[in-house]
Image 1 (cartoon, rainbow, N blue to C red):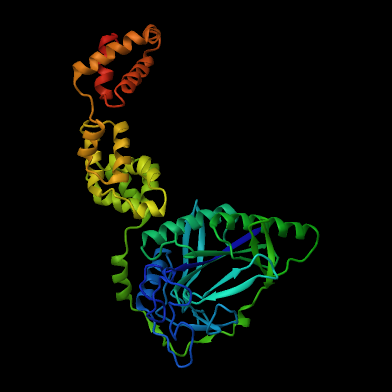
Image 2 (image 1 turned 30 degrees about the vertical axis):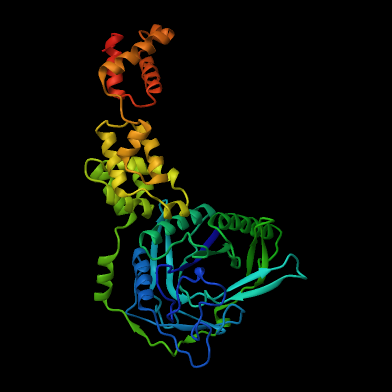
Length: 469
C-alpha cells in the first residue's frame, strides 16, 4: 500500500509586513538584501514583534480547512544551520505540549476521498539561495535575505493520498480556497510550495523537496513510487532521506539524510509569550470570512439556474466570480456567467492581462442585456467583448463603429432568405425528407448577415416559406 503525505508552505502574501518586523511582506519588488532590518537578520539584541494580522489570516485558513483551534498557541525555535537562515534558527510552531499550533485535526474531501489535515502552523520564511555559474567549478551561491521573515503558513496532511492524481487535485482545490479567502496569491513565484512524503507499507518515508510546480510534483511522486517499488522487489532497504526532483532527467536524486525532529532541538521562543485565542475573536473572524466556493457554486445553480459545470468554473475563480457579482442581476445572471466562462476567460488568460483589463462590470451588464433584448447576436457580442477588453470603449460606440447591431427588420431578413433559397437548391430539395436541414439554411442567413440576423425570426420566416410551420 502506498502512503503519500504533503507539507505545503503558503506565504500570506496579502499582508503588508513580515511576521516579526515592519519590513515589507512583498519582498519581490526589492533589489537583493534591501528589504531587511536587524530583526530579519537576527542581529544581537533585536526582538520579534508578532504580526497580529498574520495570526488572523492563519486562523481563517484553519477554519476553512475544518480544523480545530487550541485555546492558546505558542512559538518555538527550530534550530538548524543553513546559509539562508540568518539567525541559525527558525521561529515556528511545534506541538510539544499538546496542540499549540493555530490549527489541527482538519479535513478536506477530494473526489469523495477524505484527506486529513494533521496541523496548520505559522512560521517565518527563510531567505533565498541563488545559484550562478555554468559548471560545478564556476558555480557560486548567492544569498538574498529579502524574503527572510515573510509570514508563512505550513499545512501538513496525514499520509492519506493513494496516488499522485489525488495530490494534484488536492493542491488545485487548495489554491482556489486560498485565493477565495484573500489570504494569499498562489500565482506569485514561490508563494505556494509543496513537498511530498512517500512510503510503501512497512518502508521508510522519503521526502521530495524543491519541486517547482504541482505538475512536476505529481510526476516526482509517481517516479518515487516506482523507484521504491523496484527497491522492494529486489530486497533493497528504502533509506529515509530527502530527495530532490531533477527536472532535466525527470528523476528524484538523493540530497541528504532525513533529519529527525530531535535533530532540530526545538525549544520555546522566550521572546514571544503564549497567545490566548478567544472564541469571541474567532466568531468575528468567521463573520468576515467570504462565502465558500461550494456555497457560491450552489447559489449560482439554485438561484440563477446556471448549469453546474459553468457554476463550478465561475465559483472557483475569485477574480471572475467577483466580476460576476458586480455585474449581474436576477434576469441577466445566466447570460453573464456564460459570457465570462465561454469567452472572457479565453481573452484574459494570464495574470498580466487581468491586471491590465479595461473591461468593467458595467460593460458586462450592458453586453448581457443587449443579447437578451436581441439588440446584438451572440456572435457579434463576442466581437464586441474582444474590442472592450482591448480598448475599454462603451458598447454602444463599438456596435456603431463595427456595425454589430442585429438585423431584426423582417423585410430585410426575408430578402436575404430569398437569396439563400435560390442559392441552396439542393438543400431545399432535402427539406421534406430531412426537416433538420432548415438549420443549415439558418446558418447561411447568419453567414450573409455576419451573425447579425435574429436567429429566431430567421427560423420562423424560413419555416413559413418552406411550408414547415
